Amino acid sequence: MLHTQLTSQINRLWEAFWSGGISNPLTAIDQISYLIFMKRIDEIDKQHRLKAKRLSSFQYDSMFE
Image (tube, rainbow, N blue to C red; front, top):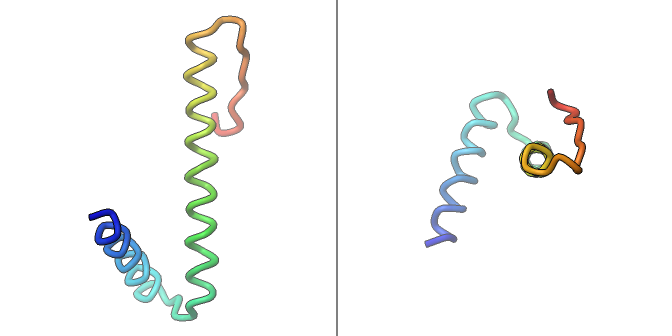
C-alpha cells in the first residue's frame, strides 16, 4: 500500500517536472530532494512554534514568520 502511494506521488512529481520543462532525471531528483528538505524544515519549525505556544519557558523565533 505505501509503496503504491509513494510510486504514484513520484510519478505525479515527474509528470509535473516534465510538463514544466525539466526532462533531465538528475535535475528532477535534485528538485525532489530540495522539496523534501524544505518540507522537513517546515515541519520542524511548526513543531517548535507549537512548543513555544504551550511552554512559556521555551522561546522560539521562526525564520518563516
